[in-house]
Image 1 (cartoon, rainbow, N blue to C red):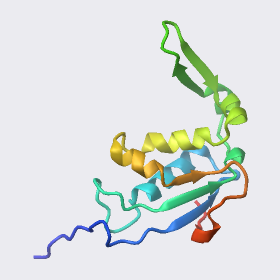
Image 2: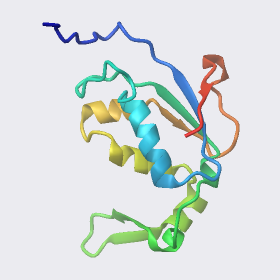
Image 3: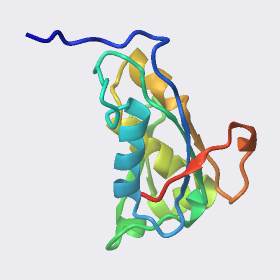
Image 4: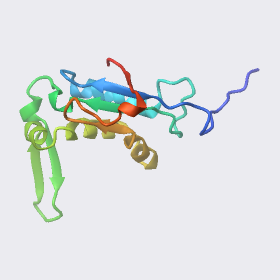
Length: 143
């Protein structure tokens, strides 16, 4: 009978991946990014460990959505006062902060605890095509 071996914190190698978001659908791209950040694509995956890789996303401002989501999808925030709920459409959010929708979608797909917050720090999103992570020589992947 074979024993299952668990990876320890220093026994795996982290890679850097570069993803071009130009023309990609928001939800499908976020799902693939969350899988890589979590490490679910690796054979030694354990749900309680951070064995995922770094992901650099460029051209986040050119992301697409299907249907009428640009006008219909709403992000809400609450001011703290009664009746203080603010609704903002995806179109307005994209104009104000083009990296917010993708980062928010990936955040919702990660665990909602300390592990998820640590995983989200390995996601680097940029609105344009330039990024400062050339020294890590990220591997380009098409999702």
